[in-house]
Length: 276
Image (cartoon, rainbow, N blue to C red; front, side, top):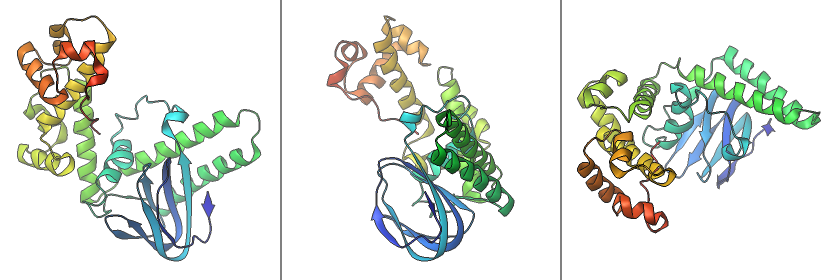
């Protein structure tokens, strides 16, 4: 959706992902938590169900790329291990109000022109609908996402650097949660002091790095319990917890039942909420 003179519009929500590229003019972008001035080159993501709107639009030209991630089946290879992708598409939207929109991506003019051309090609494919346009549109969207994510890694603001470091440590946790991870391993991956890492996690997720790790382990243990016939001890070890008694206590605390009872009747209990 290419808007050459975007009107003011009140708070509203969508049931799809909305990727916004501001090309010209200015406006105030509104959310339920506050409002922020936007300029040409700004790029941000509006997740499904998040209310937003615009006011004070002054010659604003922007592009909305709307899509449903679960229907597109985007290849996951490398995406979650890409700090720029995690920072732009997950962390910045999740903590936008806390960081007052300072973590948004801002494209330099030459990069804005490059991405705009990809978007024009995408729009042309969607309009003409020639043979194979689904495939070509998907590859063009992937190029847009990849270029934006890569550009985010080059951002120099303190907020973007914080998001990128946090994205790196999240990737380290997700890649090594089954190992004997210690807090010093995470501080090394994040290039932060222990105190800074603890504060960053508390501010971002309202929990410590260790609690985040344990939630991830228990969430994966829930999947493993339903997937195979491994013993409880084997499941515990597969997610990095060698003490089966500790695993049972942790599981009870987070899920509300024992691992064996969860395996028998999983629908009666709640798995730990997903971590970012």
